[in-house]
Image (tube, rainbow over all chains, first blue to last red; front, side):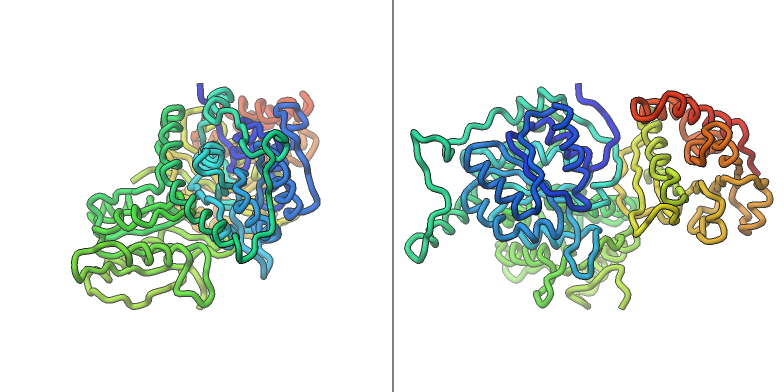
Length: 397
Length: 190
């Protein structure tokens, strides 16, 4: 029987790691991911997992050791945040290019400077082009569920890619919420046994990892990394379907909240989706037809599906918890714009899309901020005019 | 609209505001409620003012912003009254519960409150007499339970036993349980 308990996001992810019982975990603690490593190391000390657990001296070493262990054929996990992810950056790319199914929860935290320990999505956005799959979570339950599903997605024979599962630093990682934990055996059966077909230790079938490829082969390798991403959404949906059977919880590439008859809506990632849903409920009570789309799979970005979901709206606002200095707008905004640009609308139709940068370095986003976004959208629908393409929420200027 | 009870705890680093918020959430969960309990992570140190929060509801809580208008504020350390605006955002029909030897009427006057209900209990004295140490968070839980009826006293006692069982000495756990019960009896309101 699943247990209903109160835990923080970090607790819940550590419990998921205990139930996954990876062959190898190599990690370096960093706020606000620290508790994941701390609780998991307790499980190791208590003999609750059989994991070879290695606390190394840096994130660069952590990812390097994960790459070695995964190439050797092990089921491998680590976890990080912010500067930790930035520090392991060069090897993050290598993990993806070797097609190693490493699973890494990333507790989203702002990047320095100035030094800040609180939530924004700059860290994982910095790795969005690294070739990793990226899955965002809204709350404690999703952080747990996504971590378990990530193992199946990463190790799927048609995928074999590393996966980042993100949860918002402090807002979720350190907030205690009610969540449902599956039985250990159910999780074990769900993820199954992992048998690498390309193990470095299998001398019967020697393989090479990390050769030198110049202008002769490098580009084919990269082309294949692009190609494999096409199969990921299908696998994510397949795994979600299986997960629903054991958990009764539904997951997709993204979640549509009251979108069917919506006139205008917001696109958002992470915990802010919950706050925005509260606003949607309120505005619906007032008779406004508003909706929300929460992106779960950010890499690969399900462009056609998202454009299709938004195509009946009269205006869209994209909320970004990170900035692209000197770019058009935030990274999610650019993805949504590009997706809609390539959508086959009837002749002459174009949906106005605006962008809001919010919550950098943990700046709170509250109901009033999101109400303002919907009010702006309402005005755009009425006047047909966009006053400002990119705005900042809750900032002093 | 969904009904959510929002609670803000004021204490100083090391006094157990975060733990109290978690115990309350555990007790509410055990009674079938949906819960959130979270601290405010600033640059806090031992002795510096800290805040912790609870949200309780019969339905799943989607909201993930900070708490702006708590219906209940609990002040674990009365020395904060002069330095922190503990009533900030407190709803018109809100409840303020203070660890203080003063009467609720005096606190009400000190803070210039009109419509809100104020409760006081000398949790410091209770803590010193039952635990021989200044750990005022658990007695404040007793006072909160009595003055708001959010959860039952029995559930809170159970959760404290569960949370500290195996971590603290038996006599310390018993001291905490006694402190909660005494504060439950001694809290006064106006």
